[in-house]
Length: 180
Image (cartoon, rainbow, N blue to C red; front, top):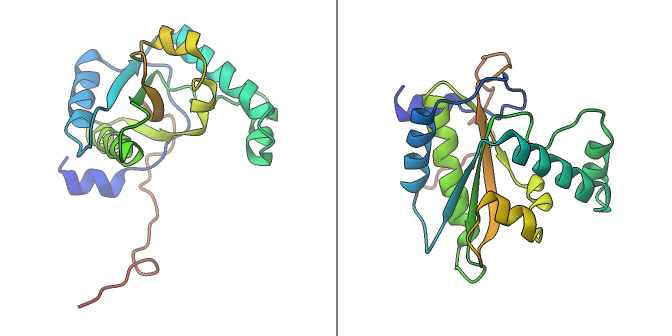
């Protein structure tokens, strides 16, 4: 699939098949993320370990319940809700706290992974709020392998989609203007 078609077809997937993503595909996704424009250091952790994924979900739910945020508290109250949506792989992007534009750099890497996942026949979803279960949790950050001194910025879950493969319905007429 060419890049423009992958961009057009990319959508957020929140239901995944219980099928692991092949190592060769994960390697291609790592390359895509590392090809993103960036300022400074962006570290990628590829988490496939089901126990660690479960722990991230559990820690995020605890933080959601105590957040005071109605949306997050509502999600945490839903029976069976998983912040990582049951995906078999989670790409977590981290950076030193003082890195300028770290959020933009990590978001670019996440976008490249999401587009590459679409091109390779996978579903993906940008992840931010689930990081509440990781940030400040030194034990979990060490288990994940985040280098000391780096902080989680954002992530992308990937896997084989269990959702309808219909393309997203996006309009370009109501959110673009041209100055010519």
